[in-house]
Image (cartoon, rainbow, N blue to C red):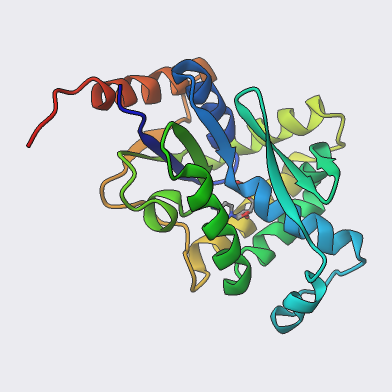
Length: 228
Ligand code: DC
């Protein structure tokens, strides 16, 4: 059976990672959250006390940085050195800093090379901002996720509460809009829908419905008769 690449891109808090995880589970594929890789770089810099990014200093600041992803079930867990990162990556200050870090070409080139290596054999669901446009422009299935800002604020708010992180809906709205603006307007690999991506508006969908939609699209391709 064909093991395809599924690229899921879109705005923050539209349910990309949760959907990607569920799709990977349903198809017995590997899930790779590319945003967690940018967050890991941001977390490492933050831990070094760096608060203001200077692109030209990054090679020096990141000289001892080592990122690796280790497979745990169907998930790839993120390690920096031997520290396993999870909740730390979701802190609001790391989200904002990751968005800045991800605008630097030098960082993107390194992480993109790693993402391509991880997905090269197919059987993978990768979510991010440029997976269908830059990382895997030939992905068999590309999905672009969007949702109304109100729905996204509520989702992120509930997600933070569930993780025990104090949250304020107004601050979340501001952060999401600021991040959209930065992700869409950066000169390198801006957030864009690939021309051949299918749009999934999740405003009125539940997580199981989002997963089912993408799984059905994937199955149409996986079981399609071969064409020449
Ligand atoms: O998906 P996320 O919120 O975890 O991503 C964190 C930041 O990393 C986000 O602001 C955009 C950036 N990012 C990116 O530029 N390219 C990707 N493929 C994934 C994330």
